[in-house]
Image 1 (spheres, rainbow, N blue to C red):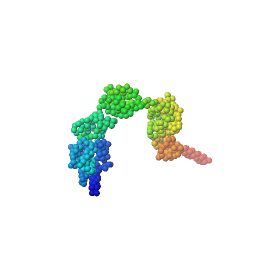
Image 2: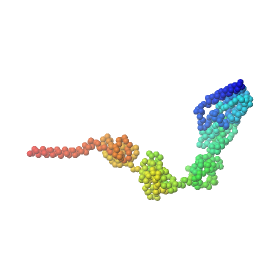
Image 3: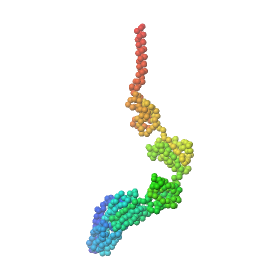
Length: 496
């Protein structure tokens, strides 16, 4: 019974010790939300290090060792100095250089277990070390940066690279002076992590200058810009870097744009074929290769006029759009397939027409666009020109203006705009710029309402002076005649 009680007490003590260890770890590293790893992966936590079999013991690491020596609980921290010699209690001294955390853990626990069986030994990492490395070469400036034991070479290189940096020739010089070159393309493309090592304290990273960068696009599986090594040319670019041709690649139409040319300072286009791929055509710095697709040979139709610009409020006026189509495509399917082009509110779809070999063919796109059962008698033919006219909406201006008439409707313009088009108010006829506005349905509108197509704007003739001047001569004449008549009557009466 006493032995069992001792074991229970020891287990409780060990649990308390472990709890204090993890409490210390949490205090030193912060909460999960406070320890976010940045994109470059320049800092880490004890949990990440202990969960990785790759984590190497590093000078600056702090470990915790706890075990039971008989009835006494033993707990203390073990820092790792640059000598990498660590003392395991009074039991042994271990050289931790070049060992992973898991290897060291196993070795320490075996030593303690051998001397204290049933000791419940625990060896954990409290704080992983952070250290500095130097980055130089093709960078904006030589820098020192803090990293940790699970920071890979690529994290630093990609963070400090310039447009002229080479990812194929990155040299790492260790603190002992040993130098080794790495190729990050092989790590990224092939998953060869031996080319993307973990960094160690006092490493110097030398980024080389790019020698030959070429781009490839078009009908290949992996278009992009690649850095070629010496001896690699068109064949490797297509099949190694771009991962081969697509099924629709037309290798009879390959265009090489050469921006650095001895013959043409402004650059030149060189036209290649499958034969040039087979012969591994030599490429230069900044060359750009485009491999055409058979789809580029599809016939083209041109659409112009009142086209929608992706937004019904912004028609692409005076614009011609070229569209490739499949052979034997019906115009009804064509219009529905490119409905966004025919969605402008200013388009007169009922009076669209097709110009084919100089002949204008009227066509109504309205039914084709909105009736999915509609089938046209016309098929799209190469080089057809489809024209969609603009709707001709007008505003009528009448009354006391200098040039009454009908004027083109412009959206978002007020009544004063159209009065101005009509020459402005005749001040002798109109007082206070008074107007009446009636829409196309005969409904009256106020001056603050939106002017809609086919409205009629009437400038009122409401000047008293104008009316007086109009009728004054008549009144004067009548009064003159009346006066004359009365005078004659009076004179006649006197004679009698």
